[in-house]
Length: 252
Image (cartoon, rainbow, N blue to C red; front, side):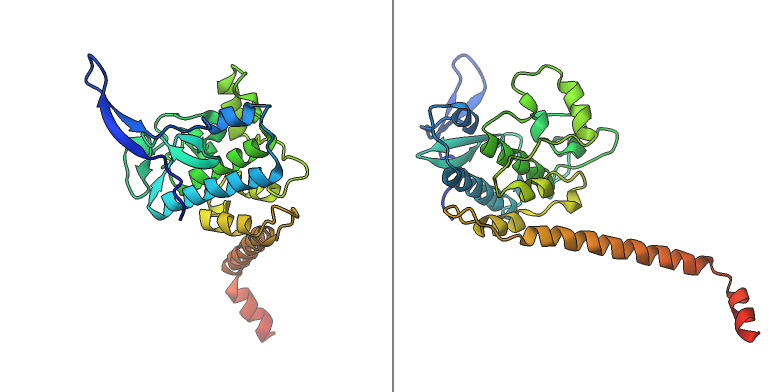
């Protein structure tokens, strides 16, 4: 797999301090956010899809390595690179740094489950999937989600997201169905990174064509949930039946 993680060149120590810093390779394109806000740069669908696929490949590598969460996305030589793993953790670990005992991060990109401190929730791969959906929206809109960069009512926004607020999908893009899946409130209803990668690889950047198996996947989940619900209702009704009454009816 092509390298998607920023290279560590060395380590240094702050002057008159005790803290150490990692020296990383210089990213000539800056951060993804600065790149997207630069109106001088022409950002066509082909390049959008390229970045989306590269980010997905990087997250795929992280998840396969059983690591989650990266705080920064850089661009170097027109290629996506992940950096800043200071708050990353192994997905199998437990501990305060990997739970929602405190709200940390940038609110629009955070899994709504992590925003609700009333219910214990551990940082996991599906948190990255939610964030990935927001990133996809930002890549196609070139805008800050919920105008977060210019608004001050962060607490109000957090409550709105908990109550189901999501960004409007961007017209004329084939990523909308993936966004909807990634933004599901319940983590189990979100696709995993392998499913997203498979769908992205089916998108033709030249003709803007895409297979829709992820939609079928979603519909299949809904059908299965409906079947399970109906089966559960049937089982409950059977338990509530008066067997003596049934036997009496048959004897008569």
